[in-house]
Amino acid sequence: MTSSKPLPPSIVERAFEAALYADTDATLDTGASLLAADPSADPELARRGEEFVASAWRRGWQPADVVRLVRRELDDVHVRLLSALITAQAPNDRPRGPRWTDQLADLAATPAPPRTDRFTHATTVLELYRLLLTLPTLESLDEQSARSGESARRDHPESRMLPRIRALLAKAEATGFPEEAEALSAKAQELMARHSIDEALLAAGAPAADAPRACRLGVDAPYEEAKAVLLHAVADANRCRAVWNEALGFSTVVGFEPDLEAVELLYTSLLVQATAAMTKAEAAQRARGRKRTKTFRQSFLAAYAHKTGTRLAAAVAAETAATQSTTALLPVLATRDLAVTAHVDQMFPTTTTTRLRGVTDEAGWTEGTAAANRAALHTHPRLPNA
Image 1 (cartoon, helix red, strand yellow):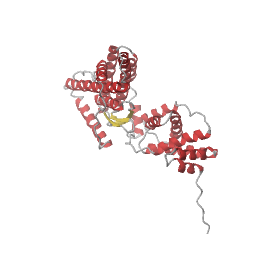
Image 2 (cartoon, rainbow, N blue to C red):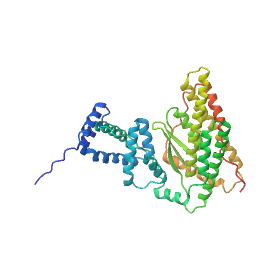
Image 3 (cartoon, rainbow, N blue to C red):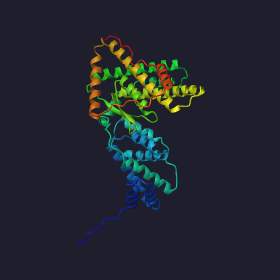
Image 4 (cartoon, one colour):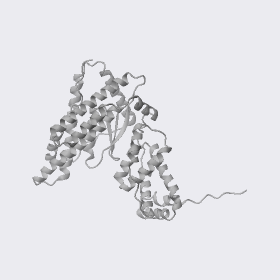
């Protein structure tokens, strides 16, 4: 009988053993040196990268989530390398729905990694792989199977309202006149509510019931607590729920697809408007001789989020009272609210409540409240009687 000896570890395996399982510069240099000295290891190194990406998908991550984390923890060159790996791996992956497809399309426009010497490139690759190895398991966002997601997109093409909403919010972000921004934002929210109501009634009459879905929106530092509060308020106003993951820098928003689109559009626009208003207010404060920039900004955004949430909640209560006679609509909305709540409870059996910290600047709070008042939104339009 003959016995076969185990094959010696490949260069890639040796580099991984040296660099991926110990977080030091010395081990990283050792692994990079091994890879740089052997160009024949490049195909295996790329293949292993695609395996790391596929493993991230199995752990509940989506392309935009991984890119967001890599951008936060590493550098632009790592983001470019990751985008190339995801794009190369995509043809081997199963279809996962329209939101996933949109994320891949965005990554396709990312520039290729710059050409560098072999040692620098190997170091970048190992730094990226180190991070991918540490990704925790997340709640799955698979869109009720890719087939149902694609079917919904075919059966319900994009409403004509969505381009109008985007245009209104873009104008609100660009204008330097607070009153105009208020009017444009209010009109955009009115169209969002109308779009949501139309979709709810359409889904109620469809042969197959619609179902809540979820997406993740980045909540980036600095002042991420205030931004998370703002997103929570916008989600509630549009019949969604938001759960913030502070450690990973995103919130998961659960709701029906038209409402998720509305939340993403409005939150992004309000954040742009808040930043512009904060910069202007801060410049005025500096002209008067103050220097506490960080505390002013934190208090400003906290006040902006708090006041926006208060006004949106009041608008929701007023609109609910105005729709009591709309008998065909109210059961539909109640059913959808219950479905969203059940979906959140299923995804997140345990959550905790976080309070805003470090809000100590009175001038910042006053200016942020005033800015939120100028960006006041009427959450839902009055509805005609059924």
